[in-house]
Amino acid sequence: MGILHARASLVRPAGARRELCVPADPPGPGGPHGVALGGRPDQYRDTGARPPAACSGGRSAGSPLPEDRGQADGRERSRGTPRLSGAAGVPGRDAESGACGVTPEVSIVIPAFNEALRLPDTLDRVEHYVGTAGVPTEVIVVDDGSRDNTAEVVRERGGRWPQLRLVAAERNRGKGAAVQLGMATARGRYRVFSDADLSVPIDDLEKLLKPLRAGAGVAIASRGLRDSQVEVHQPWYRETMGKIFNRLVRIFVLGGVHDTQCGFKAFSAEVADRVFPALQTRGFGFDVEVLYRAQQAGYAIVEVPTRWVNSPQSRVHPIRHSAAMFLELLAIPGRVRKHPTPGASSEHRRASA
Image (cartoon, rainbow, N blue to C red):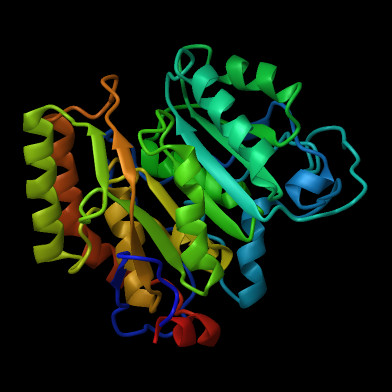
């Protein structure tokens, strides 16, 4: 298909599904955090420093809420994607004007739960990358109900970095819910999520953007390819459990993907707008559902070799979360059948051929 650089791995899409409406009120089995899908629409707020129009896509006061953009193709917005309030450019806060109205090329979403100590270094590295990449970029940190000073760290940095903004959840709902919320507010042509520990260096982002610019729908960093470099390994028991989980993923859900759990993935705007509103898995196993939905909808998934440096402060409990992720894994095909994802556009289908 001409979209891959050296030794990247392509996962062909499964048969396409016809375009269907996202259910208005899907049921929400809890993820590892035991949190159901539902929730009050006022549980989330978009707060902290807001980029000017040049960074945020040029929304003015009174513009539709970010997650409402999916209605343009006839789909209902799922109530599972929380509504936002209190942001500049969104009803609920005094408007902050912006002039040039340039939509960001790239949106980087960073889910964060009790990351006040780690975020300063992470944001230093991301800000340096954004400043040198030469691509209009917005950075969205989603505070998933942290009990520490995560939100304050982002607000302080946002006061001098206009491309950075904070989206804060009133309570912790899980990593999948945090990424979904960030994607609902993202405006970039390409939308990326990265773990807060930057186990995959942010400098590897261009490796993911290259296949997307050539027409792919999804590009993911993979530790399972021959050219990948694992510079600092996880403890042996976590690596073993990860290999077992990935094997189960290939058997039960998603054949052909070497590494579903590496926390560095990129999507075209079309894929993000179609896949994330329908997401049902709220915990650490959400990656599998995202990729499965994309594949079933007809999008190609490109795996890209990457560098990996394990973070010793990982919040994944090797037994509790692994058991929860396995139960989520078994539920994913049924969830997708019950709440299908709209099929890929003809342009993406041509790119996947």
